[in-house]
Length: 402
Image 1 (spheres, one colour):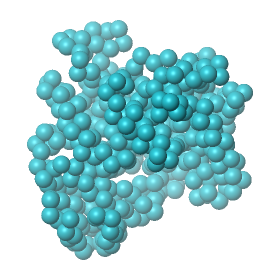
Image 2 (image 1 turned 30 degrees about the vertical axis):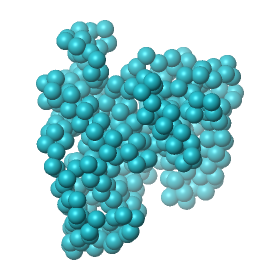
Image 3 (image 1 turned 90 degrees about the horizontal axis):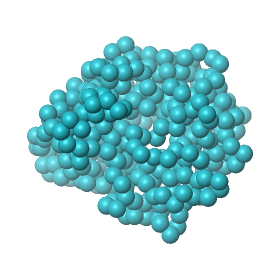
Image 4 (image 1 turned 180 degrees about the horizontal axis):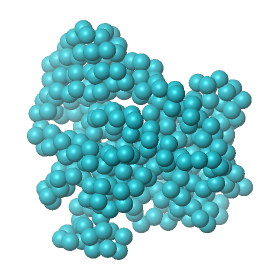
């Protein structure tokens, strides 16, 4: 692109993703070297905009789920069961390969049935004594009914509805749709009209009153509220300097994606260059598990009570791969990988050139301040420019004035 800082960030992101890809998508190559579902979802999503390594993606998802019976949350983390379900759907959505999905569908059902049995009397999913309610590496009180967990449950239920319909399981689709609608309606308990945002949790039937980024990011990202409420969240939470900032690449993945969803791509571009660029200035040649610009000296390498405990090559650190591919290049699969839509956004850049993988072949995009040129070698698509749709036929270059 026209911004060398962004080019460097993309290269370091790709190197991070490459090093964390072995037999599985690993969380890091030097410390844990383990398969975690939180890392795996983001790795699957970033993979579709970089290496499109479907074999590693499926090995990772199959290994995470393991064998029946399902009697504990994936990685013992409540949120990670939902991330795993979403990742299975993401794999299918981008590749259209139902062979793998058929092997996972029954395991999604058993995981969801286990989850519903673990819900409170009010129908909310809560952490049990042996569960880890994670959300993020931050100082968070995850007791009670945590809003983020309900939102992830709803997102996972949506995927279960879609996939049940795909396979013709009408009864399951109707059941999960009913649970989804019921749970979504209960989210109103978390909305604080006076603060124009979702509170972090409810304890003993009462909202805790804390407005933090995490649930409000998910509300936008998973379309859990209308446009009017999204605008309130944007102004009063996501762009409010008084709300504590997110300091992990892990949760910044969702934060920046949510901001792109509401049209803030220029802001996201600036934040990407500022945040990941600062790591490079610190000497990073791969991206880290956690980065707080306020930390100085050896402090910035500490984690888990260990002076040098932080992973400095962490899969979720490669977030810019997804943000750039999905929202700047503007590529999204459709028809389960059989076609695509492309809605480029320069976001302040003077120009960019990209080649992105598809389920079959790839698509090349060149954009500057005057024109957009696109050619796909195997799959048809739709180019969207200034609200107008243009058909992209395989092997036929199309050029459109901005």
